[in-house]
Length: 213
Image (cartoon, rainbow, N blue to C red):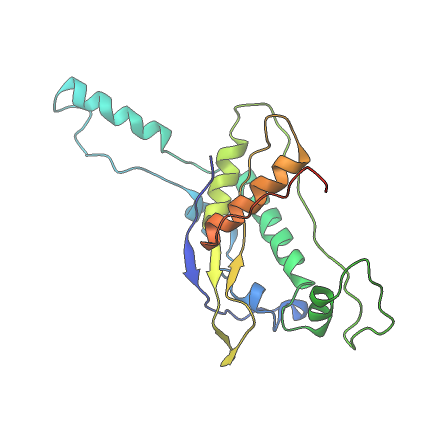
């Protein structure tokens, strides 16, 4: 099942780290929060009537037990994973500033076509990183990760940056894709493309044929 997040219009925030400044992909992310603010954002306490334990029909009170599934009390590890996710998002974007000549050069030339002249800002070098969560089944890894992802907008829509139009509109911050049953790389790639099409409202990408002419 796909995890659906929210779509927001870009609001650019000031950033302190020099390598992040002037990058609309990073400046459009939510501002950095303190540990206590992060844990507060991630907690979910369903509202309960003050007298629900002592009044009303027994069956009605039983219905409130469903709130147990909605209750979220984040542990300190939530903060560590939140910071890790936030860090890899920003690191990935730091080498993909859409306003940088390096990024434009990378996007407009095929990887298998080496060029002799590079832009003044240098050759493209990816800074993308990943994280791995390990733990026994059922301890809450997926729930924790989904809570953290939902803090960030799934899609940020851009129009103007510093009063100038920029050459793209949708920034997909994250998607959540389940591993296919057969662990097929082809099926995983198809799931990624389908998820990207769904969150951006694009026509579904037609899978390439397995058959060669």
